[in-house]
Length: 298
Length: 298
Image (cartoon, rainbow over all chains, first blue to last red; front, top):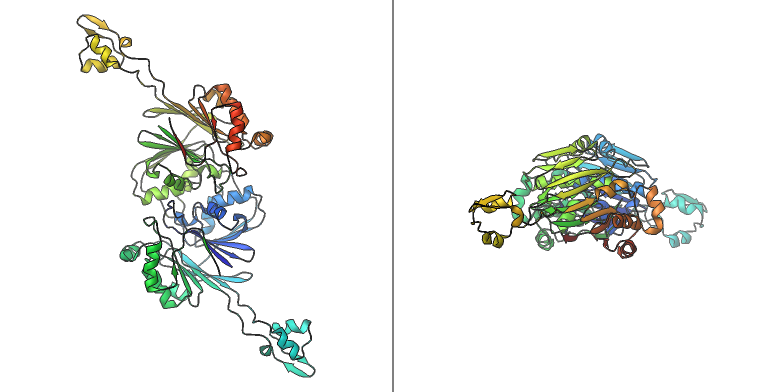
C-alpha cells in the first residue's frame, strides 16, 4: 500500500505545487482523492500509471478539486482503456460529471460509473471500506476515510504441527476461526492463530476548517491528510475562507492521536514547505508537508 | 512581439510536453491559441503572466485543445481579475463554454465574452486582424491567422529639415501621407517617408492534414505553426487520423515560402524532438521543433 501526493497545492497551481490530488495504490488499483487540473500529468511523472486509476473520490466542486477528470478520461480513452472507472462525489456529482464528460469530442469508450454519496455514507468494496464525513468548508464538501479490511491473525504453522494438526484443509478451517477435532481432542483457533491484524486506515479531509467530524472520522487512523492552507499567523484568515492553518491541523492530529499527519492544500503564497512543517511539528511531531510526488509505503 | 510555445505535445501530455497552447505576446496583451489542460501552469512557468491573457482562440473541441480554460478562469478569478476575457472558437463555442464555465463553484467575477466564428471569418481588432481558415481534421476545426496592421513607413527627420519643413504638426501630417506646402513648394510624403512596413503575420493551424486552405492562409506569413504529430515514416497514419507528419508540414512550408516553420502537436511517443526536426530540415531548412516554454522574439 502506497500513498503518492500528486498535487499538494491549493486553490491554483504554482510551478512548485499542483492542485489537489492524492493517490493511494492498494493491491492492483489506484484510488485518487480529488483530481485537480493536471493530475494526469502528475501521474505520468510519478511511479504510478494513470491507466491503473480505478476510482476517483471528489470532495467538492471547487475547480481545483475536479477539473482534471475530463482530460484524464480522454487520455485513458486514447490508450484503449476498457476497464470501468468509478467516480464518487457529493450531491450533484452525477449531473455535473455526466455533463462535463460529454463536452467536445471525446466520449469515453469504457464504462464510467458516477455515484453520488451522502455524508456518512459507507461503501463496502472488495478489500476495504470507504466512508464519507461532512467537513466544514464554504460549499458542500466532505472527506473520505479509507479502511482496509482487518486481516486474519497470523497462523502458527509450527504450533499447529506440534498439536498434531495434519497439514491440509484443517489448517484453513482453523485459520478461518473454526475449532477442529484431532484425535478426539478439540483444537481451538486461538491456540494457533494470532489476534486479527487491524487494517490500515487513511483519512483525507479535502478543504475544511478543523471539525469535530474529522476528529471522529480520524479515530485510530494511521494517516490523516488534512487541509493546511495557511501558516499559523493566518489561522483567522484560514477560518474565514473555510480552511485550516498548519497548527490547527497539527492540533487536531495530536488530539486524535493519529500515527502520521500530512499537511496539504498549501496556499500558492508558499514556495517552500519547511517552515510550515516546522511549526506543525512543534504541535505534533509526526507532521509532514509533502512536496508534489512525495510517496510513502504504508 | 513574442511567441511562447507553452504546450507542444498532442493528444495527451507527457512529462516532457504539455498539450497544445501557444501564446503570442503583443503589446500589453497575451493571446492564446488553444488552451489544453495545464496551460495555466505552463504560463506560470514561462516569462508571461496568466493574468495578461486577453483572448483565447480555440481551434476545435478535442479535450487537449480547450480543457485548460475553466481552471485558468478560476485562477484569474482568485487573483481578482476585472478585465474582460474574450474566447473565440468554432460553432458550438458559446453553449459549450458557457456550460463548462458554470460547472462547480467558481463563476467568474469578470466579464467573459464568447464568440462563435465561421471559417473564413475576419476580426478587426485594435492593432491586428485575426482570420480563420477551415482545416482538414476529423472534427470541425479551423486555424487562425494573426496579422499585425501594416505600419507607416519610417519618417526621415533629417530629410524633412533639409527640405525646409519646420518641426511641428507638419511632420505628422506628412507621416500620415498628406502632401504639404512649405514656402510655396509642395512637399510629397514619398520624399520623406519610407514605404509602409508590413505587419508580421503568424499562422497557427491546430490539428490538420496538409491542406490547400493552410497554403492560402500562409501566404506571406512570417511564421507558420503547423501540426506535426508523427515522423515521416508514419505519414499515412497521420493522414488517417487527421494529422500531418514532419515532412508533410515542412513540404507545405517550403511551397508557401514562409520565413519560419514551427512544428507542434508532437505525439506522446516521442520524447526528443531532435530527430523530428532533422527530417523536417531536410525538406525546409527553417524548421524548428520547439520544446515546451521555448520562446522567440519576432
